[in-house]
Length: 380
Image (cartoon, rainbow, N blue to C red; front, side, top):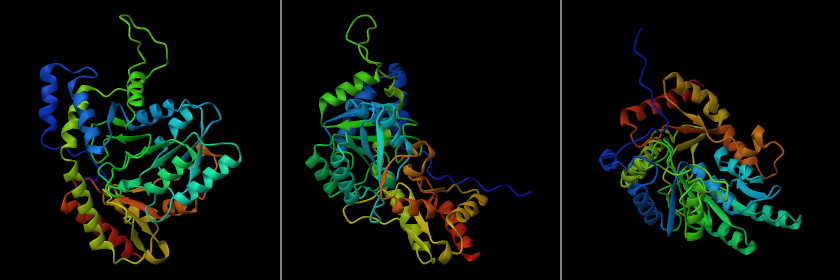
């Protein structure tokens, strides 16, 4: 029996040249336990990179979102507006704190939250006497949302803006960095992200009090005392010094990782753009996408196969591909939640597919992906 072809992953970790040296330094200094000089350095270097005054290194992007929700002092029954086209980790922390999510659809220009529908949602909630406690905006698949009108809307109504930039590190918006325009921003260093610490996240803000409190909560809310004393409920959310060392090395190659992913997208476009019924996620005019994942939409009538048949054709070649995010308003766990719009996100989910996009994807493996997609189209 012939050997099975090697697995082509959607987005696998990609180490650079400094990570091992920095981890070795952490071992040599015996800073293995949580916190230490690498954590301090990673926070400072990351804040400088994204243009905020402060940063807190945490165990995950979800932890960062949870602490942001905690800062808002949400009460049961409070409402938080959130993008519907996202991963569930964006929404779960709203529920952790007892609040209810209200979803807003995306627009086709960038696949991010529609400013027009957000305006409709805020005005409607205010009219009903349910002023939202926050807006959680997601920058999807490496592309910034249209920040200016959204920031202006939140300012007009006095509603805090929290930016989920877990998928958009390295992107730009009119010269600014997604995640730096609101009350706070969150980033993720999960294994599939553009840079990784294997698991980790960062909460960034220009509000020093917010970051100081987040660090306090993230270290079990231990009061200043020689004994263990706690006046508030805390969490075990801090990033370890060893993982922070990896993050410092990864941050140094961020530009290279972005360039590689954009090059993969360009190669896919050059090879596949002529196929009938296949279109790529657009890049909005207001900034540069990292192309964290190259996403396509498939029209089954024109292409000759639907998104799921194409995904299974790739899987038959041992190539990992995934549907785009299933909208949150369609998730069973959020059944009954209100959504403004929804048809755009539903269409993207029905037709959208993410292709292998890792910065360490070889030209040969990318060619396998291209060939498999082309073969799926020829089967019509």
